[in-house]
Each structure stands twice: as C-alpha cells, then as structure tokens.
Image 1 (cartoon, rainbow, N blue to C red):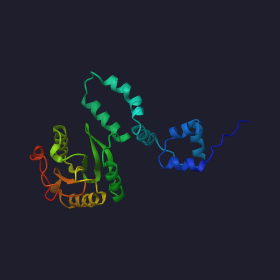
Image 2 (tube, one colour):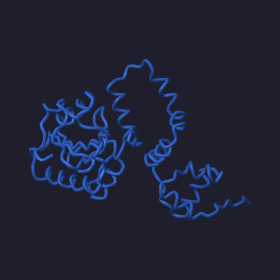
Image 3 (cartoon, rainbow, N blue to C red):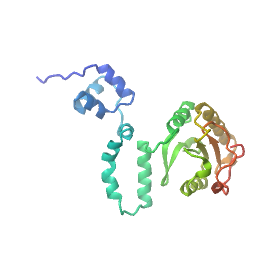
Image 4 (spheres, rainbow, N blue to C red):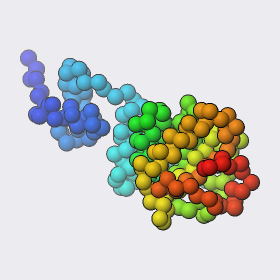
Length: 235
C-alpha cells in the first residue's frame, strides 16, 4: 500500500495559492513535486488556474528577479540577433506581452486596479495589431497610455503609436506621472470616470486624445509633436 503524502499547514498553502503564489514556487518551498500538490488541491476543491493564468503568475514572479529574467530570456535574445522582425512576429510578441502582462511600468498597476474596481473590465498590455496598449477598456474603445515623463518629451515612436491608435478609432487618455504631477490615484480615478462617461455620450471623441498628469490635473501644453493630432476639449 502506497504511503499517503501529507502537506503540512495545508490550509495556509491553499491561501497562498489563492493569493497568487504559483504551484512552481509552492513546490520549491515544500520540496514536493507539483503533481502531488496539484492532486491535494484538486481533492480539496481548490480552483486551479488554467495555463494562461499560470503563465501570467509565473512571469509576475520572474519579473521581480533580474537574474531569473536573464535566465529565462537569454536564449531568445541571442536567437533574435540579426533576425528580420516581421509584422507577424511583432503581433505574436504583442500577444505574449498581454498574456504575461509584461512591461507594466510606473503607476500602471495602481491605475489598472482602480479601473478594475470601477467595473470597466480593463485589459493590461492589450495586444492591438503589433502594439500593446498599456491599459485598454475595449468595451468603450478607450486606450489608457501611462508615461513616467513629461508629455513634452515623448519620443517619435510614441507619437506614431498614439497616431495609429487614433486612426484605428481608439480614444486615447495619456496619463503623465512626472515632477509635481506624482500619482494621485483618487484624482486620476475621477478623471477616468469622466472620460468614460464622455465616450458614452459623445461619439465625436473617438479618434481623439486627452492628457492629464498623475495628479489628475489637466495638462494644457503638450508636446508640439502631437499638435497635428485631434485633442478632446477639456482633456
């Protein structure tokens, strides 16, 4: 008769799993194979993550460890040297970034969580064509792009990104967190609600953009590189 393997402090590990710890990390800490842990969780009625959810959790953990990122990505970096970057490969990479939530920068997590709490069903690193939108609200056609610098210092690549989004019918809200415009999530949330309400009642705002600071304040003067693009009055 085979010996039944018990997991010490089982309820505590279930709680950690539900809070976002990966099976891989639990396995390493318990020094126990993942299959055994999975079977215990399954028998206890724990809702197990699907492959996509498990991948996102794994990459969330990896991002916090630079050496782990290097180990995970070094082979791909080497393979990419000298390779022509086709539109198909860019689109595949964009989808991967969405699934794994790669590249979330300063303030994005807080803003994403705030939008989720509003019930607007945001998607982080939303894959659109060969691009990733920092935070998308697909139901309302809104693209939220978060920058850790002044809108006056945006790169040409960013301008092209914004222009393509507008031409694609998105309404873009740029949130710039810099200097005196440090993140005030309450003020930003109020502006996002106003922005969503505006898109609901005014179809003419589609294909236009607005800019606010991280403190929620309206930024009057933006980059002259964006002057040729249509801006929403009041944003």
